[in-house]
Length: 223
Image (tube, rainbow, N blue to C red; front, side, top):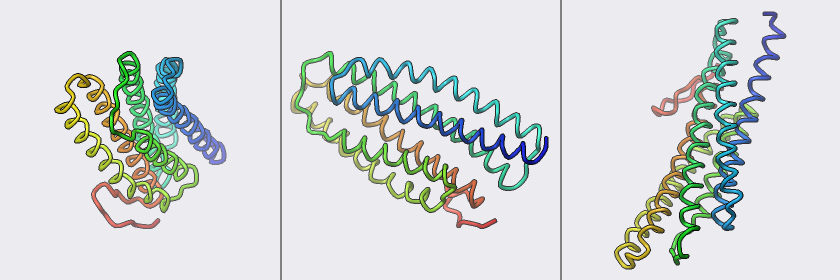
């Protein structure tokens, strides 16, 4: 494969991954907006998007593996392909967890409204911000932006713990709202897991750019 054509194929792969990422972002947005606005149409749309995400995952994986087999890339190109494969899996899981959110939201909307003292919108906004920053770092090859994502994960974790604690207290005080409170706990947990996937994406960008595995707190190396 001529080198110019190979670089074009790498660029095409990156674009396919970013298109899948946009679909994953849209799916999470549909799930949360459907819940916040009581819109069952948006919630049903989540499942349709998740099916498309699964198809996109297979396409991206096949292309990445083909490029690895045909070109036997080294150094930064090999790290890019490895990062793409891992990021691809995280995006697919974001789709799965968005479906979980939509299912719990639909259940909540089918029940009497309960006055639950939580701010899921704040948690959702921060999670979506992490995804945006992680994907922008992928688009630009920007390790500094990727590192900024890692710093936000602790905030989402704390929000999840606070919501869990508040819902346990609510169940104890008003057991008639147990089903609604448990659905909120599940939505919060899925948002926390999505934030973890955004963190994984950011870590893979750092690995691609610098060759450092920050999951184990290694110092950044340079090419």
